[in-house]
Image (cartoon, helix red, strand yellow):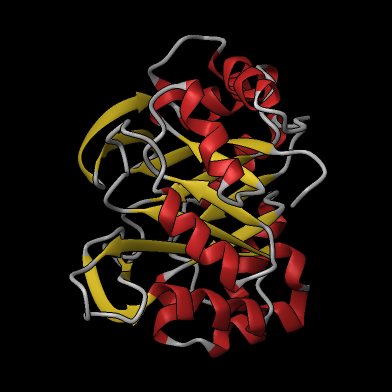
Length: 256
């Protein structure tokens, strides 16, 4: 586990606006990404993540100019995902000011792309975004399935086996998104986090389901090195980041 737990607001971007829904559907507007990035930087976020939630499903490139504008405002690391398909996309994102790139659908379709990207840039720049959902017993060995295209498509792949393969191929971190918990504000999927933690040693970012500051320590206890959320920061109190850090600290974990 990291020396200090990172708290990461996630900005799901669609057509240049931050959106948020439930289970990756029924999206509603949450504001301008650059403005929100500036606000979260000032509020004590440790990192920021931009995810273009319709880039893969819409076969559209990530909005590089938006990344460049946000990077100019930030003094904390920025990860960008959505529509990242290979070395060329990662190179453009890094040149635009991103610190790390997140990949999902393209890696599922062609796992070798992980090797190619990490060979060019190193493991530290690549985050595997793993969108997983629960499936009936027997559908996959672990009971968790990999999905792609913003949770819209099932793959039949076992999520825990995929996390291990991606880690073995060299991804620097895994962003574990629970499709079932996403936007529900009912708490993180602790068993899913525990299962992935048991399979990999790379840093693990837990995402999906946070509704109140008290939800976050459970994800850390389950093995997360960082916690990522959207709704609680977009629509919650202005000091939500401070409240989340206070809750994690009160549970006995170090925060930045």
